[in-house]
Length: 427
Ligand SMILES: Cc1cc2nc3c(=O)[nH]c(=O)nc-3n(C[C@H](O)[C@H](O)[C@H](O)COP(=O)(O)O)c2cc1C
Image (cartoon, rainbow, N blue to C red; front, side, top):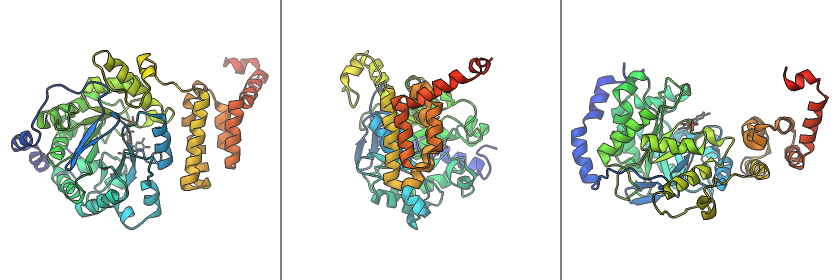
């Protein structure tokens, strides 16, 4: 059955697919369809009812529950290239009843701009009230999660379950759009469908087009079904289908203020080249990056510089936030190991500032394996161990400085030299 458990199957599909009327309406609404997809390194523009909201790049930091708190967002932004960052998934009920956890997750800052706040749920009124809360508390953009596969979220008909009952999802989306101030773009992040049957039936295309008809300012598509979770490879051909469906309905997005609605591709972007491939293979307007930023928060700056380098071959462009000399020389902004250590420290200190020592110690011990992935090309086991074993913030700082100063590396080399020869060579 298409649409997975709880789907109302054919009725949902029919309602979502009545595209003739929509196509006629959308032509009036989106007057200048362009056949040309945006070139690389075109910053995204999100169209809100009150006017366009321009972003600095076409690269987005993905919402990742457990990672995308304020401290991490500021740290990644500082590395450059991020057009839009997003909070973790937020419970509108939590925000409305002042839950401390929801407040912590929604907390933002003057430097944390532009910021998307992502809500989950299915109840139109609660989502609308939650969206208004976000608008009143600093959101540049409000996003509705339509892709989360987690039981806790789907059991309440939120997350990916929104892909299973399109009429209800459209009602909720309309309620949220009506509740939001006109200056705020409303966006959605989805998967390719609940399962293979939904993918084959084109549910993601129907959902994306229906949301655009109801005022969506951007659609992000993670190229997997819900049933796939994070298994297998991201399917770029599925993202391309959504790009084409939205382009057909709204006019191809070309970055112009009155062009079509941008579709952003997401999934398995681990390098700057992956981001360029995502854009060129699917025709999407930009790339959203999640796990690829854990060990390398510079991936956005690298991917922007690479797009510029490739784009400059064909046209002159403003240089945005990456230095012109780097772009002209065709180099990515590769940071030194010392700069990488500074970034880990800055992240740690921000966590202490925003959420206290206990939280910061817990998170840094948990995440040092990821954060160390690009330090000394990932060969920094003694650093990771020292941070994991640290009992106080001073011990975390001492471990980082000992690695920077070489003492921890010396220990590592000595212990390797003292090991029996056979084990040192792995034979
Ligand atoms: C641990 C974890 C938590 C996630 N939390 C969220 C979330 O809160 N909201 C959301 O829309 N997606 C969430 N995602 C999905 C990511 O945003 C993204 O779609 C997915 O990881 C694929 O992109 P990537 O390969 O660049 O990581 C999460 C993914 C992971 C692995």
